[in-house]
Amino acid sequence: MSETRSASGSPTTRRQLLARSGALGTGIAFSGALSELFTGTASARDLGHGGYGPLVPDPDGLLDLPKGFRYRVLSREGDRLRSGEGPVPSHHDGMAAFAGGHGRVHLVRNHENRATARIPVPAVEGLTYDPAGRGGCTALTLDSRGEVLSERVALAGTAVNCAGGPTPWGTWLTCEETEDKAGTNGCTRDHGFVFEVDGADPRRTGAVPLTAMGRFQHEAVAVDPGRGVVYETEDAFERPFGLFYRFLPKKPLGGTGSLRAGGRLQAMRVPGVPDLSSIRETGTRFDGIEWVDVPDPLAAGTPIRHQDFGRGGITHAQKLEGCYWGGRSVYFVSSFARSAEGSAGDHYGQIWRYDPDRRRLTLVIVFGPDTDVRLPGESPDNICLAPGGGLMVCEDGGGAQHVYGVTRRGEVYPLARNRQAIPSAAPAAGGTAQEPEWGEFAGVTFSPDGRTMYVNCYDPGTTFAVTGPWRR
Image 1: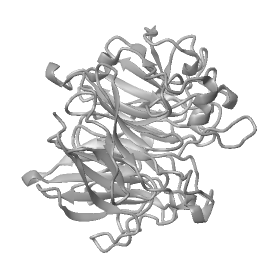
Image 2 (image 1 turned 45 degrees about the vertical axis):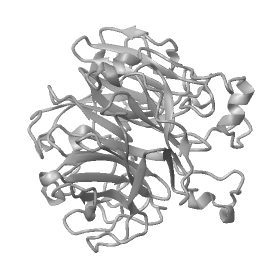
Image 3 (image 1 turned 180 degrees about the vertical axis):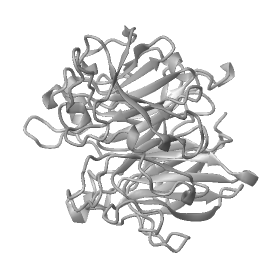
Image 4 (image 1 turned 90 degrees about the vertical axis):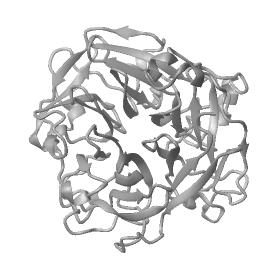
């Protein structure tokens, strides 16, 4: 979970930061061509609603929702997996939903576990990459009524499985957000790869790293459903910051296992722009985007972002997070940039659009800082397109944690508020009843029929199914 810090190094709440900037209560302040984000997602009658009303406090203290909405807890950290393989692991993160037969839904869920995780993903023969890895994926199968039929390990022995993305052929690409090599932090194998997971039958995909897609601090991926090109974001934690990549597979759109055939990994170069955080104005457009072959995708000696990309260098960006395909373009998120940490500029969140037909990159959204503290002006993270039009945004900032909706007209409304305090920040561990730390949301996704939103609370790990009058 991200945390803003003052120059003295002490934690700074978002409310304090906005108060100092005079931004409290000034209303929505993110700008850009919102209509670009929602191509093909809604009809005219679905546009511009201002949300579903105020959030109603949950008497059970788990999830606040608008009137008319309800939730079901599908899975909680520490409960027993229905497969009998062990307890439900910690740190629920990226997730996607896939259609199964007879109205069933397959959910594939990441567990962003490091070496210190409370509950690791249980090691299962044939599904474990590195016995020392504590991360991986679990898979839930729901029946046509939304009841959990099964829950099992889908991938084990990986590390820091943060986000990823679905493929057009119905599998999940899970991403390791680490560069640990064998012999580091107890690892017996190199990490920093993408793995393919079949939620319906995990043994079809096993525990095979897609090494040609690069070894770096992966965050998320999006697949061009027409060309089969895979776009990848890198959330590097220190300078030089991450890159935006594309992978050109030898067997595009070939179905499960085709990405194992290899391909070319390239990084995006915006001529004359070494750091995307230097761009401030929405609508800023760059034509003639270049893609440069990565010298050593396996990063055997040097991390990719440190490698020599020749004359013209390469383009970096801090905190590259969510990535998704919409219409004819790929969108990717920079959650924030801070000049104090080495970026060329400061912002509270950007969304960029890359159009491969025109080789054009456009800054379409800028978040904050001139925003009401209740609105998503800080650190957008996981983002998904909602079936009724608009976006759902998981905000990864300080204080209260929400899932927000954003309409095509730019109206922002709260859809959910987490009521669970992070266990390590509970009063007994140094937090206070007046100022607890809340678990962030992650992995927001919708069922194939659009009637159910699934979302995770990262810590304590909880998976919710939310139903209600989505098309009201």
